[in-house]
Image 1 (tube, helix red, strand yellow):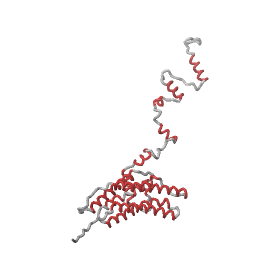
Image 2 (cartoon, rainbow, N blue to C red):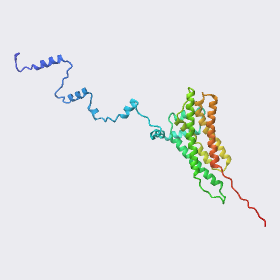
Image 3 (tube, rainbow, N blue to C red):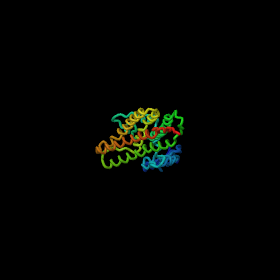
Image 4 (cartoon, rainbow, N blue to C red):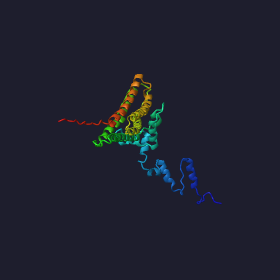
Length: 295
């Protein structure tokens, strides 16, 4: 039996127990756990080994979006217009069909655009219409003088420039005027429907799609057919515009509403009739009647 003064008795355990009772929040470390101390030291300082390996610039965009500091591109920058050309093909197809087949109580902006206007469709529609008008006008002029030996055909390339000026001016300047007018009326009246400028440009661009097959039919040397296609194209294109902008001025003064919609229809008529008159009017043939002189 060992005595109380046995030198081989381990007294340090009693001292450790007294220390633990005095400081219950102390952390005990096992000798075998060599990685515990570095981990707890890094946790105590608030840093981790994974955070040290992360790229500090990796989450810059996310931080800007969360903080609301993400800057939108400027109106004059290429990035601003790039998003208007990011559209699926079937969406463009649906919008073209919708512009050719207007239905009552169907707003083109609310049904087809859905606050997502594009410039891809309007740009190519206007470009196609420019070349279709200029080429069809040249072909119509050539067919009208076919068989005339005194006529020498010369391509009129200036018609491409004139057609581009007329059509693109209509597709951009008229929407700009409409947008400015609606903005002015919204400041005068409350509870009026407002449209963005790009939405109005998109509506006007797609409303011109019906004129592409119409100008191709104007090649045929039948004047009655040309005017019938003009009437049909005007009705379809004008209906899209009227049904779209009717909700914007429905609650306005009746005189303002009638005048606004009348101007929209009148400008559409001037475009169609003007293109038909200028590009497809065949100049009269000048014939010289010989005179017999008597001697």
